[in-house]
Length: 323
Image (tube, rainbow, N blue to C red; front, top):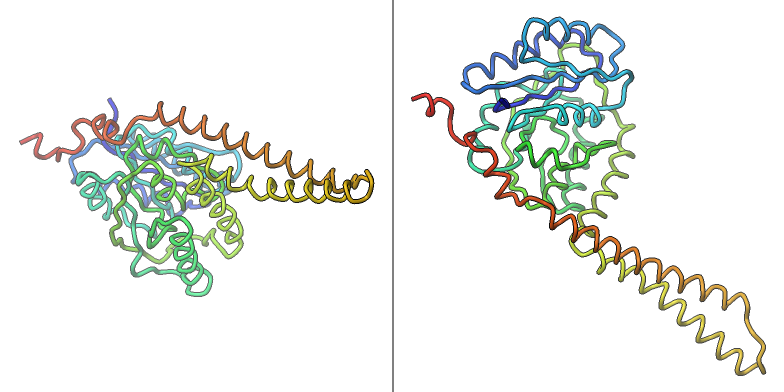
């Protein structure tokens, strides 16, 4: 039987944090009266992280450990945890003890209110100003403007998802930051709540300014997906109009030159016109193909109402069921 809740925490060189993190999660979940599982994803750690996590898993069947042979990054680690999770609701969090498991009950309350995704907001963030806080604020503002989904803290890993919603979203590169934007395409209901944030106790931060360019590239891709998803033919047709207009002008000028110069042809101009015309035709065919893929996928997608209905029994408080 599937548990009510899955808690997923990627780990990379967090040997000293594994034990305290496990105890903090168990301490937060036990009073809730829900069935749960914990998934630790070792992202190719070079210290004793996997060994300590494995020891804990041997003592508690509710803890499962997934191990990568090398370091792939936070998003692939999180995606692996999501793929292996069996819970009806999934909680993701960092493995460095900066997120507080005691906030998990507040996320569950929001899910019970009917939201599909609940995002945490680190209001009193315990990080360095120059390298972490300022870039984060700029990124959050930029992501909100580009995607149209005003999430105040996209970088906060502490989030809750209905299983069927998050499992339908592809994750790679730094895409975990854009899950709300991707989910908005399907009309997911998104809530935000303030969460506690603690200073790092052990190890060193794995984040830095080097991630900025990856985030910008992913943001460009997300904007493309969000803008083109519902009307691909409209957008491809718009892009095709420019080369089509250029091709028309080139052919018109070439014909006028041919008539006024007694049959002398401009070979280069004719070639440019043909290339531009071919590009316009290619874009139109790409738009038609995208439209077909989108319409076919839409017919196969389950509505969010059906997804919520499939989570039978979760929206009830387990303490009420017992009483």
